[in-house]
Length: 125
Image (cartoon, rainbow, N blue to C red):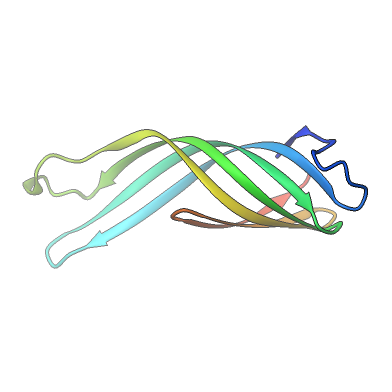
C-alpha cells in the first residue's frame, strides 16, 4: 500500500483519512470432480487498486476499494474427449469494502466484495 494523498479528504482532526494505491497478484485454484474425470482451473490475477482508508481509531481503518486487473487462466487435467480446452483471460474490475487492523509491525485485513472474500496479513518495512 502506497499513500497517494496523505492529507486525506475529510480535513477533520478527529478522523484521519488517506487515499492509497496498492499492487498485488492473486492466485486462484478451483477443482472440479465428476464420476469419470477430475480437472482443475488455475487463475493468475495481477491487480492494481485504489482505496480510501478512514481511520476510526489509531489501529482500525475501514475502506472502500476499486481494483483493476487482468485474469489469465488455464485448465489442468482436461479430458480432450469433452471438446477443445477452454481458456480464459481478460481485464476485470471489482469493488469491495474492507477493514484493516494494524499493530506496530503486522496488519490484518479483511475484504468483502462481489464474488470475493479475502483475508490477509501484512508486514511493515
